[in-house]
Length: 407
Image 1 (cartoon, helix red, strand yellow):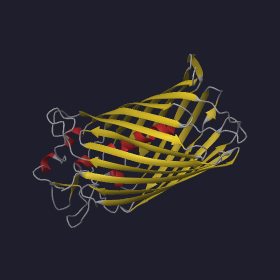
Image 2 (cartoon, helix red, strand yellow):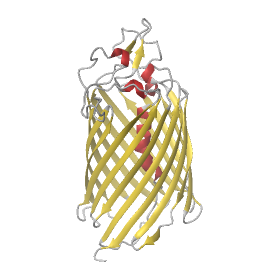
Image 3 (cartoon, helix red, strand yellow):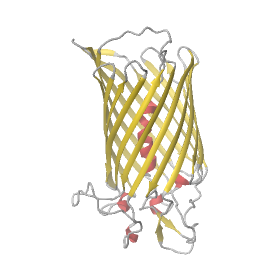
Image 4 (cartoon, one colour):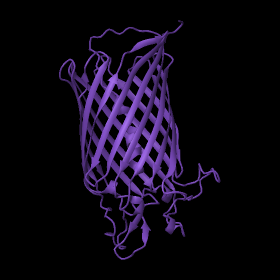
């Protein structure tokens, strides 16, 4: 299922970061530094299950994703930062033939390409930092154009920071942009047996994400964060190639959902230095939306510093959600219902994800001004109560070029 690996891909980089702390009385020395940080990530994702939404809540959910990605952050001075991110997700799925006009094999390859550009600047000595970002994401049946603004304020002692960000996405769900015969948007993709008419009169989706984050250093051993958010979506919120089977008929119908959705996530994080070598990173999130879903997420990561260079961090994440008001399994919907889906991402389920990260951080100078910051390997195993399971392997390499201006 696409939503599963896309959400995982977007979270991957943040999961690699191990929290660090700076003593409140650390000396600050002004330097005119130029820095360039390069992160290369490669991840392999494999999942399987038997509740595919493409075939009405039954059938294989087998999916494989290879995802190389690179992020370059350049700081020309201590005030500015310019970032560039690009990657490709190569997807192989047993059901991909059903979401493309060209049906050629039992397992077809699709791809998602994404690029993001960002710029931020500190505003003098006010403690304020402002940022702007934009980008593009394209796959065979989906194009997304994001634009975002952010502002943050950090106190002079560095013990408190408040962040506010807003991100807008314009999504076009028509197929054809990366097909050799078109290279332009043509039409929404419906199940092959239902392509005799247009089921929807819109092909766009609009999303506005507003996020607030408050970070507070409690003492030398503990810091906390509170992260509320608000998400509003409008337009085509269902997936046109998802089938739904009714009790009264042997023929499928196209999934239908409301054209507006509100989401409210509330997160709370606490990082505790239990000892000089052991840290506890805990996180809880409550989620509500007007589709009827309520969920709870609880996660814990325990980085253990084996030496100045080596860190091992086992992690576990527990999740539970209620079902959407519009979800029912295969052949349990009736035609009198205004909205209907058999997508098990909207069902009631619980899940567990566990694994470990191994991090090597020599921070050693390789050549003059070039440093090898770290190499990390992460494995995660995921299991859902509806039978879906997944494995993820991720490799991260981080390099930095740092020099004083004029050298």
